[in-house]
Amino acid sequence: MDTIARADVLVTSPSRNFVTLKITTTDGVVGWGDATLNGRELAVASYLADHVVPLLIGRDPSRIEDMWQYLFKGVYWRKGPITMTAVAAVDMALWDIKGKVAGLPVYQLLGGASREGVLVYTHASGSDIPSLLDDIAQVKEHGYRAIRAQTAVPGVAGTYGVKHGAYYEPANAALPEEQSWSTEAYLDFAPRYLAEVREKFGFDFHLLHDIHHRLTPIEAARFGKSVEDLHLFWMEDPTPADNQESFHLIRQHTTTPIAVGEVLSSIWDVHHLITEQLIDYVRLSVTHAGGITHLRRIFALAELYQVRSGSHGPSDISPIGQAAATHLDLVIPNFGIQEHMGYPGLVDEVFKGGPTYADGYLHPGDAPGLGIDYDETAAATFPYSPKYLPVARRLDGSVHDW
Ligand code: CS2
Ligand code: MG
Image 1: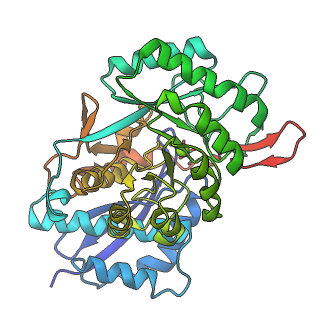
Image 2 (image 1 turned 120 degrees about the vertical axis):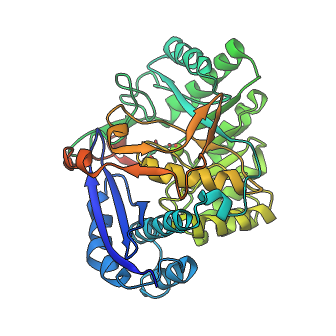
């Protein structure tokens, strides 16, 4: 019987940090899993190397569900982003191996394609309204049918979501940068710039906006109401979802669709949001929510309540995680949209292959497994470099939600 012969945890930083799990079987089949958790990369690397790798050796790589249960229930300390990212990496690597052994792409193992391609949204941003409008024009030229729009807020230094140079990367400093925040300025400005976007470009594309947990429920309700005639595809993370109940308040006031999930990692973090129909899109990622096995279960629950998927796909999920997401997206009946932020140039020196983009859609391709490779020699030339997400402070100096 083919068993797991070894597992290696690899950390590389081609412009930003990525953690990768490589599982090798006694038959020499290699599976890749993404274990990247922005700003906490080494915690997941240690969890895997110190506590998970020793458990894998000698096990049957074909028993994906059993391995998932073993690593989730068997460890006693379940859930949480570190654990669920580590479990996700093992899960992804085992699906990759299963596909390679079967000679089939993972989406075929999951039930086959339900659609021709995966609708994606990408980012546009600007330091002011004219530069946002220019950025949207450029993004539209690349064929994107869905665009997330963010602009710096006047009087607020370092607003979330705005590029500094050619590329937007929120984890930008060896110690967390401190940025400022004013809810009043944001609530006054954001609806106005989103209205200008619709005025200039019309309604024939999906417009998204990320609030990044900055509002209270009643503020989010006011925001949602004020942009209703702009027909946003969604407002993302209007308020922190630690208290799932609080979304009832937002729902009572606005029909603007709501997307939540990027900082959450298990079905228990979203089950109330889903079963009470408090959100329209569930945005957990394969990488942070226990892999294909667990995210598929979350999407199946969501389907019963007409909640669609909208998976998180920023540059801090590696191309392996993005490939795994694309396979799942192609199959599930309640797919909504997939984030496709793209990567800075050096990343494709390490990660080879993966989904292809054309005309607003991604496709995972038909190579066996996840369809992506990792160049270990290239990766070794990019050593880990600590990079943290910023911290937000209100104008009076107190800490705000990031
Ligand atoms: C985000 C991210 O993609 C998104 O919607 O909110 O940019 C997020 O800030 C990072 O993934 C944090 O790790
Ligand atoms: Mg977001």
